[in-house]
Length: 388
Image 1 (cartoon, rainbow, N blue to C red):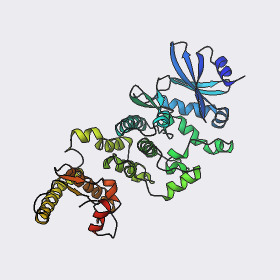
Image 2 (image 1 turned 180 degrees about the vertical axis):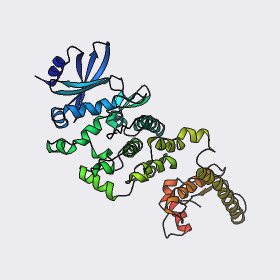
Image 3 (image 1 turned 60 degrees about the vertical axis):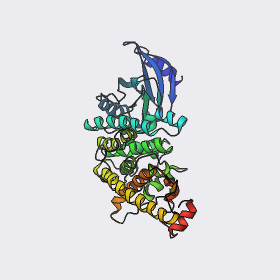
Image 4 (image 1 turned 90 degrees about the horizontal axis):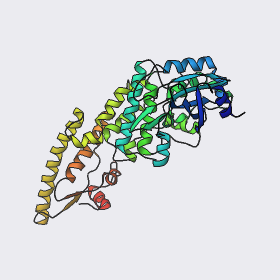
């Protein structure tokens, strides 16, 4: 008897199983009709090896704890149980697709969409953490996109799986992709908190913006080696439209030590909101004090540069030229390493404001960035970039 037939018979009095919706390494999802309430539901059935390793008692206990969560961005638990040896739990059926499916189709999301999804997920995680529930398995497969919003599912499952990860590994089953696991999870630490979900969300957001996770490799061991040896990658270096505040927030969320990350998912969301592209364009004088200071200093620097440069050209060319081409080389941080973002902000502000001055053309920042640490003279750099 197939699993579908077995489930159909075992749950015949409560649910009418209609068809399979999807199959993964841990479970199979079926579309069914709740006979009592006359509504469509999704029933997730754990693979036999998983069910045997977890044990019904532990699994149902963790699922029940998560069942208390009621939040707009959490796909709530409707029912759970054991039927003819099958461990299952029931969720509302939502029309839409998982974030994993969206990324498989589009690879990269717009900055606005990515931040919106991250905000929804952060809201769900913050609520769960306030109720002493850690997800432990935040990944694109567990984020559903429906009605313009993101909802997180499978709360409680992660804890049960991680608790028996060693036993599952012995049966040949790998517990989730290492891509989204926090360093403390990889090291097998049991005493974890909400900051482990912050790490996973940072990884998911990086993937939404860049098109791949921050650490990749041909094998799980290769990915883990990069995570513990390589520097935290910058999403902005790959995609320049990502604002500095967003890039800095992602980098902090991916810190190897939990103490160096945001203390909560809500703090992460607040930091991301400062870098919202829509709010940045709508209110150009808002932001952090440091960001506002960079703008004011940038204005002063631009004014001095324009006056000095035009004066020089007037003397050497006998008048003001129709158009001047120039490049802004990266500002160098000579202070504390933590102030590096300010140097980047200054470079961006000066470039942006010079580009708005009539009669000036500014070379793309990406082209100028490669001359940030060079022994070439200004004249040689100008020749390389084709600017004055």
